[in-house]
Length: 165
Image (cartoon, rainbow, N blue to C red; front, side, top):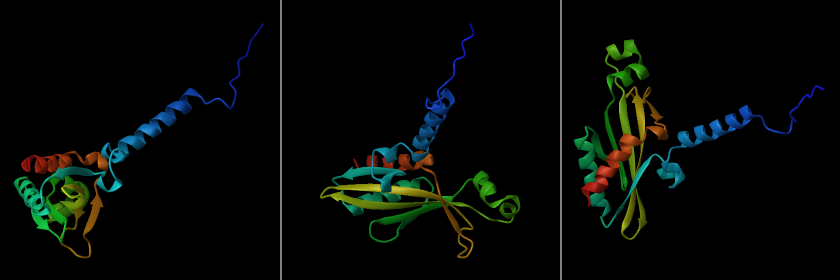
């Protein structure tokens, strides 16, 4: 006697389950680890600093970024911006061979914000961008870096917090 086993159409197949698991993992990785534990505005890179004034935090931030090849500083109350030239590889990828040979340069721009949390606590948070056509008011384009690329910037913010301890 031949038995034919048919799968019910209302039962998910193994490949469908694997696809769903893959999709969920992809979404979690692309969201970045910090975004699940902190506010959305601090999802790229952030650090909480206690028992220091905003001026002390801004000065330590400027020192750390300058020591790591960035130029810039305050851009208004509680906001800072630092830039450095991107690697030649990044410039080639973003600008192309001809433009790179012609002197085009790509920048890494980091925008920081100091957010007051309580009487003696601030959150220093940042977002990084690649900037093509830097300095050209018409062609300049700022492209936000994905959260999965936040590691070097989180490290810089950790150095700021360590400098203030």
